Image (cartoon, rainbow, N blue to C red):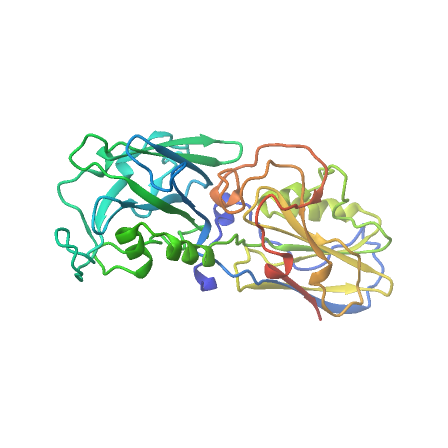
Length: 405
């Protein structure tokens, strides 16, 4: 994914301010700083097409027979949609699929859409087998004429606003119709959103184009193996980063945060929730142990991009830094281990992903209360902690690289 098309939605929230890239002093009494270095923050995450994907099948038997239902859960923000596909079992090569770019999940006001969304499903002819003889053919994928998909399949959505998690229930309603059919196991996906667009709005097939091996296996045999493998290889959490606040200080206490303590209201929350460093930058000016405050960057940092700032220090000084995990509700990267200001080279290993404890967590890059989607986190008030394994987050070194030169 080229970095110049990665426009993180934090811009739309009005969180970015023009930041000064020079240090500030403490009441004009700051001692002279002797050494100048440059600290660089690079977003090294590899964007994947899908933030989430999975499969579904019947209970007891993999196929979903007339009258049976199957449900699965997924997360999404208001710019995202759900895509799924399953075989029309009583055919040579037909398959159901959601309209592209997927089932619409939020209305224009950002409210979740719930209830019957059966009108969002379509029935397609894969074009690889003759519908009568079953002989191989080579035609583009096309809508099946004279069959209304929504009369054969009912779709119902429910929504949990706290987790920004939907449940889709698929019911086989084809029983007793002229097109009675079982459904095969199926697959689903939610495309990653970069703040401007979905990274892949058509994961399974392209209408009116020739088919591919993955959708052909589903359409002809109800076999999802190849499609699951393809989705797994292209599914993963990604994120942008905010401008980074860098602090030169003396003593043993990191002035940015304290693990196991509730956020003190000095501005860490604004970084962790919105990427805005201004409040903490101003708060730290009065801290007696802070000797210099610097800001790297003045806009969100997309994958493949980097920001940097120069800083000055004296022997014995330490540095601390913080930047937002942009596609979260209230997470931030910061150095867990202290760093001597004289250090040179890669210091990424000293960095940890933290939860500020100020907003309820949702699936990264798929939570409607995240700044990525113009949302505001639901308030919580718990201690600052390390982010655990509730979500399949990439390791720090696969997202952020921090170097000092």
